[in-house]
Image (tube, rainbow, N blue to C red; front, side):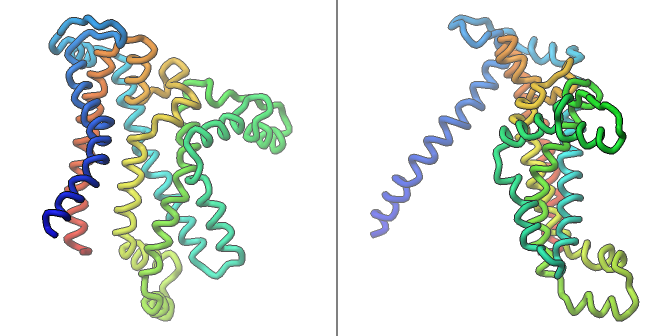
Length: 293
């Protein structure tokens, strides 16, 4: 019986492990390999160039712009949905009329693909007939046709707003689940003692929601590192590389300029940065788990 169980375990694990190896592990190792070559993505012949691609990275001004944009993207992608999700959860965790309907409405964007979300917000940002400019026109009474996605100083932040709109619903659901573990008796005692609503939130609810916050930040961080498709569909890294994150920069160098070796080197740097960030975060997560676990 043990041999039979062992056999079926191997059989059932073989397929997913094979798929994982082909789609994840093999491309990872090949990216490391090609980062030391000048392969253009097409020719079968290429030369080994050592660390030339990595030296080029540190002298490329576009790389430093992508680093700054990636930092802005990650901070905003974590901070925005976390704060908005917490705010919505606190507002909807009451007996207000239509709370269930509002929960459903706010959660719906996360069910859409990022491509669909990007297309929706392209329509919203349209200079001539977009919803945003039309609303501003109705308030100001003057013609307003600002090109939100075509201006270097607004393109990245416009995409961040669209991203936050999509991701807020997930954070809201996690916080709503966390609020169910907050003892109602404790909140009643605080109210009897004269604590204001803000004091109850700051001194009671927020500390008890620390595990939920850890989960929300972890999900936001992972999703932000994967945030390529919405940038690709909305700006493509433009205009003038103003919305280039490292992922977009890597794609443009690899598949638009056909510098596959250089793009692979960028992907290695991105991989190491992501690995470092995730490692530091999970180290802090372990400390939180020791306190609240």
